[in-house]
Amino acid sequence: MTNESTSPDPDLRFAFGANWQDYSRLIDQEQIDASLSRMDTLVGRDNIAGRSFLDIGCGSGLHSLAALKLGAARLEAIDYDPLSVATTTAVLEKFWDGGRYRVQRGDILAPSLGLPSSEVVYSWGVLHHTGDMNRAIRAAASLVAPSGLLVLALYGKTRYCGTWTRIKRWYCQADDAGKRAAEDWYVRLFGAYLLLRGKRLKDHIASYRNKRGMDFLHDVRDWLGGYPYESISPAELDAILEPLGFKALKRNVKRRSGLFGSGCDEYVYRAP
Ligand SMILES: C[S@@+](CC[C@H](N)C(=O)[O-])C[C@H]1O[C@@H](n2cnc3c(N)ncnc32)[C@H](O)[C@@H]1O
Image 1: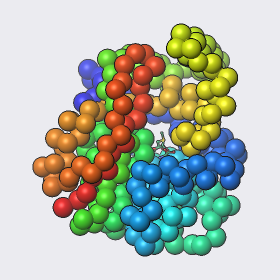
Image 2 (image 1 turned 135 degrees about the horizontal axis):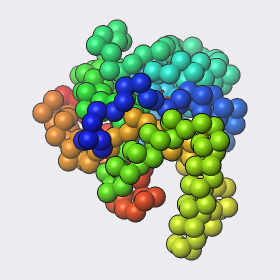
Image 3 (image 1 turned 60 degrees about the horizontal axis):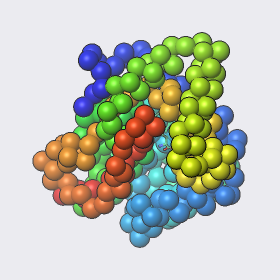
């Protein structure tokens, strides 16, 4: 499922945490409400209220905050990047005063994470960035309590996954000027792509805030830099989880094509 002929470079990794920290200054009530509504639609507040919740790869902390606001009995949040941990901690301290949470540094690939199993294990846009997505999916599944939910968002397969992997590798090693130039080119090309479809970049950016829990420019950096990078099809995910006894409950899978057609598909599975 990896997009590279060799294993991802273990020393090369996008600085997700710095991007999240910079973005977190923009979080306001509108973003929080949108994030809450997205989580309610995907997971369902009845499945969260009163349940233990683990957020793997918590990033900005916006999803963790939504889980607490939807009534999670106890939240554990982990992230590989210390700046993501610091950002999630700061966001929860600022917008939540009800306790019931712990944020810590943790690598989902670490042999012993020392986390209790949770009734909801949630990982949005994370496991494909670990360098070993299959193992990360199995590790996340192993943390779901009996009959609990496993909620994942993972990059869908397109014919351009290999191209994007090479671009992301390059971006991670580029100097600041190179990174800014790449972002500029990406925005121009994406603007032209939208125009061909009768849409305007200005409108796309204006409506972006509520779509993903990020603003357009930070998401461009997250996308261009997001390395390690892998992708997966629904059938490949089933092939990992069904032998473990998991049953698919929900799938938001888009038909993906074209250079700008990449994105995350969402999945909800029930544990045996
Ligand atoms: C694209 S961000 C997604 C953040 C958040 N889930 C969201 O959707 O807003 C990916 C996050 O996964 C974290 N991450 C990457 N590898 C990880 C690992 N092995 N264990 C835990 N977190 C990891 C990154 O540090 C980053 O904060």
